[in-house]
Each structure stands twice: as structure tokens, then as C-alpha cells.
Image (cartoon, rainbow, N blue to C red):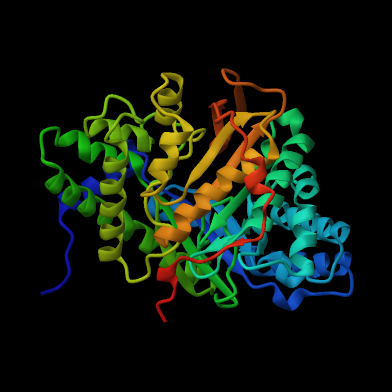
Length: 455
């Protein structure tokens, strides 16, 4: 029997696009830059710039053309590159900053808003290049507009590099200080990972992993509004059946992403990579993961039951995506960034949602403690300890976890940070006042868990 699509299915998809905030959040082109090493930071940066402009010069136009032809909003066109610390190993800290500036120029030249890959993979230790890049992060993020940075400092196989955890607390504090005139916005472009995904298309944590091809197209699709509408339609349905309904909705959303990815891949002459079906919220009303959880019956996100509700949502999204495409990857699930989700912001304002509850919810969500503003006087060791807790959750549970923490200079609990656009705004959240300094200063490496020995 020939494949056919009913009128109702067409109208349903049109409604998702027009009234439920369904969109392609990002088309991200991954580019291998390992052949761009030069004799200096300037030479290396110039070669990287030329390769990005050559490979991704038509990325924005292709994304815009697909949006016009298919009526599917394509919000962002972005690029990720091989972790720069691998390419520029042997360069100095100042030369790493030079490379970062060339990345920013390349992003501006091709018309994208973010470029990821100013990154280092240090889950088992540092190379000289890793350390130089990490030391260069604060200046690079302060002096550039579009560059995003990430550091992977733990995996289930390797354990947690506590030397890196200790260092990243200091790096985050310095990054905030150097961007103090904009509420520490540099920290909004810096992610610290456990079990980082090599094909993640979402910023700020995207990089083109060492196992990826020369170039690839990865699609990040987002549909909190569509899932919210599904949940609202069935206020009395039991949770098992509701999970099935969410799964079916995720299937339909993923098919949209698959279509856009295949078309973009063909037009750009770049291999198709993966579809990342992530419920990535925005500050827009109706585009909130918190609203989905509250529509399930929670008075406010953060109430008891929030973790269970999020676990069910995340699992249903993954199952629906896996049914729809053989190439689902990245993070694929539900994100809970505070500043980018209007419902999360409201829950914090009402006192329903704390960092401790968010940490519990990260055990079952797709990322971790994301876009959380904390007091500017939070000690570096406390920031490191928060990172260590998230890394432990990821390591033990064999999942990706991350921290994007913003110690806003001069701000205290009750104040706000304002970033605008997709980064949104956030209330300053209280952190535990008791010290973790002596624990963090032990440093070393927390060994991998016993279940990592599964070869």
C-alpha cells in the first residue's frame, strides 16, 4: 500500500507550527578543524576561520530557504568545531585567545549567533593544550560575542577529575568578573560536563566530537508547546496512557526534524548526523517545560512529585524520538534551564523551586543545572562543589549532566540578571552557605564506579 498522509495529520502539524511553538531550534553544522593547526595562534586561527567560512558559508541561506519553502521555523543556524584544545595543543594561553577571536570573526562572517567548540576534554587529566585553553576561557568569552565554551571533566568510565573541578570553579568566577557589566553573561556561554555528547547540536555545549566525520549536519528540534497542548487535552488520563500520548507526539515532532535535516544535508552537501529531540524551552509564554509538569497536576514545579513527572516526560520523549528516526542522538529529552523557562522562573519566585530540588530533578532530565544565577559572592569552592555533585550524578547514572552557573557580580538573593533573547532573565537563587572548601581542595580523581567495568 502506498504511503499517504491524511488531511487531519497535515492540519495537526500546521497547528503545531502556528500555535504551539513547534520549531527547529537549530541546524548545527559540525566541522573538523584538526587539519588547521598552524605555526602560531594567529596562523592556526586564520586557517580555522577560512575552513569555517568555506564549509558553512551557505548555512544561513539554506536554513532560511527551508523555512520559507516548508513553513517550518528554523530559529538558529550554528556551527560546532573540534575541541580547540585538541587542535591547538602546544599553543600558549594568549594564542588560545587569538584562536577564539578568529572563531568569533568566522561566526560573524557567516551570520550565525553562536559557535561552539572552544572546548577541552579533561575527564582523565590535562594536556598542555587543555590547560592553556581552560586558562584562556575567561578572556575569550569576555572579548567575543558568539563563541561558546565547554569542558568535559568526568565520565562513567574515567571517574571525576577533581583537579579540573577545582579549577573550573575559579574559571567561572573569573569569567563572571570579566563580564560583570552584563551580569556575568560570559558564564552563560560556558558549560561544564560529565559524559558530554559528541553530537549535541545545542549551545553552549556543542562541539564536533573526535569520532565525527569531516562535516555533519545535526538538528535540534524543540516542542514544549506541542507536548503541553497534548497534556492539557487529557486532564484526567492516567499517567501510563499520558506517557503514551506524549510518546506519540514526540514521534510527530521528530519526523519534522528528520525532514529538515535531510533537506539541509542534501543542499549543503554535508552528511546528515542526528536529530536531537529536546524539549528546550524559551522565555516565551507557552514554551515551557515547567508548564508541562504543572499541567500534569503539580501546583508548582518543585512540589513533591516533580522528579517523577519529569522522569516520565523525559522517557516518553526519548521513546517517541527513537521510534521516529534511526538517528536520534545528542541529548534528546527535557531541558530545565531556569532563565530560559518562564514557568521555572515563576516557581523560583514563589519559593517552590530551589537548587536542591533542581539537583534532584537533574537525575532524570537531559542535562543538569542549567542557566542558574547565584550570588556573586559565592566562593569558587562552592561552585566547584556544585559541579562535583552534578558530575557524580552523571557518572553513577551513565548519563550526561552539566552545569551552567552564573555567579552574578554584585548581585544577591532577590536580585535579577537580565540577558535578553534566548538567554532570558533569572532571579538569583540561594546556595547552601556551608563550606565545601576543604573537600574540594583535596583534588585528585574520584575513581570510576564499579559498574564502569563492563567490557
